[in-house]
Picture 1 (cartoon, rainbow, N blue to C red):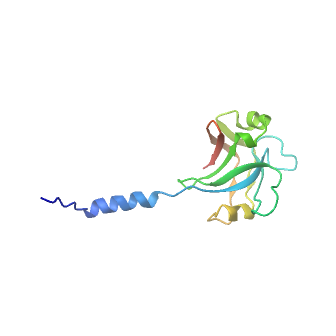
Picture 2 (cartoon, rainbow, N blue to C red):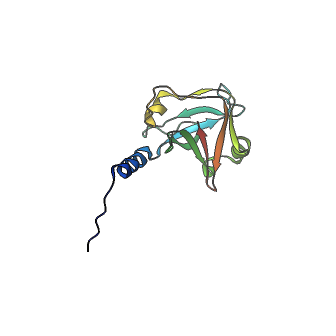
Picture 3 (cartoon, rainbow, N blue to C red):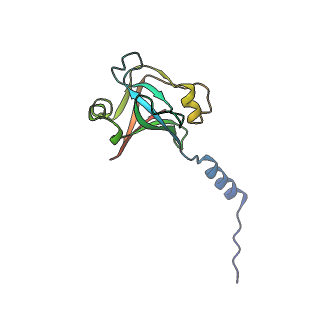
Length: 141
């Protein structure tokens, strides 16, 4: 005898809600320089972020991935091989990343990461670091 599987409206609604909340991670390659935003890039935080646009040579800074995680939060991820040891120690040695000043993300970078907003400011404060054996990720919430 064949069994018939019936999906109730409640189960269908539950499944639709689950699939609707999943968002794939979106990333693009950028070049970021750490340090307090300003003329000399001293201190801690993000000093500059730029996008190469795929055609131009890489701008000053360290190669990184920037985008949105599956929860819609902006992140910046550096591979350890792309960073000098002194930057790893001074900027990423703790459990949190300190932004000493606000950093307005340039429009060209917002376009590269397909940002919904036309303006994004990474605010001063402390942000969690997610460290693996190969990379460190700053999640801006």
